[in-house]
Image (cartoon, rainbow, N blue to C red; front, side, top):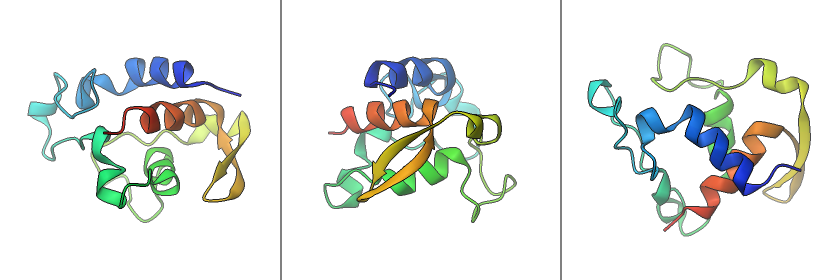
Length: 112
């Protein structure tokens, strides 16, 4: 199973340019975006104190309700679907791309 450290490494490689090293949305590329990056440290606070695993995963992976034209963030689905691990999401073991499982663990750990 991937760990929080694996997720931190993925975040560092793929997310900091927009979300910043601290995940608050102040990365070097954020000022040039049409939509400000989300402060990822407040996802739980905005969801009644519970980390929204399913919603976060679907958005990162590529939410089918938001086409690539309606969003700024990269969709990380595709090739990741080849390496899945079981992650309990909202009480259900869910096949989840290994990299994104680690990222979920990391994001949950940085909640305020």
